[in-house]
Image 1 (tube, rainbow, N blue to C red):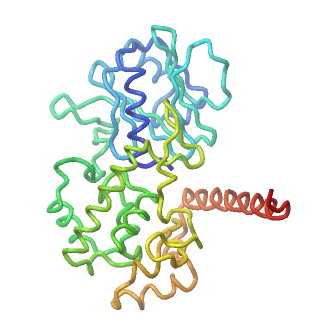
Image 2: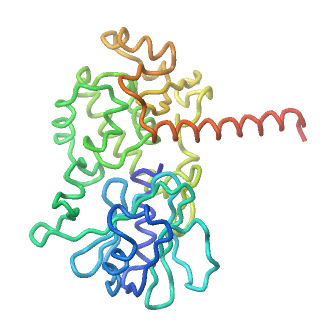
Image 3: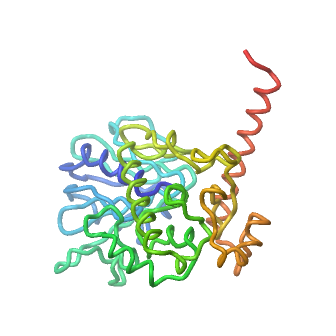
Length: 335
């Protein structure tokens, strides 16, 4: 699922293509793409508005519209945004499209239908996006990790109020915004912190390393246009950060620091990759983590979320296919 760097890349690309365009029509072939309302109401709400800006908040693209309104686009697993001529051939996977006055279209393509688009109005006083119930759309989202105001002091303050394990904490959007599975694993590896370590055991140097690792890995990924894994691409093309990942999806490969095989466990329904040598657990956490490390899975306190099961299913499919390709190459032999 696209994370902060990928969503930021899509927003930056899209900005160059659509700012200034005026919406003359909209169509929504898959009504459940909308977060609320009907396709007819959505079309009436956006028709005649101009796009004034394109930005990002957390993992959502925010398309600013004239008249104090905005669209949010959550790409989820397979969502993609493209700007094409209105005469482009129809695509059965387009779930929503905006037609512009100049004859172009902004198409939201989503094979698996998990992505969502919302129309919201802005609060006249604060400028915040407000949902139909009057609640702020981003009320429960944490601070942006790359903002200048997100200092080490602010990070420590948030971190010291938490008691959970580091991996679930770093991907918690109420803690900080935009970090998901890929960059949580990469940041923890850079910081030499075990994903099962409890936040309460961190010392000030540990906190600083984690803070700097999160910001550095996200900054580098933005520069490289994100990680083009599975279905992710941006309007102006793929990213290259996947070529620089140190641990994510490298189970069994040698650690880039120590050479020992990387491990994979599942925590909170998420595949978690790490080096057990470079990212050691302190003694205080080893007993509680022993079962997870032994079995590869954390004990479920409640049933796993459907989205977690889907992510795991897709991952298994991908790894199985990769194994078949590797075995085929092995059978053919070199040359």
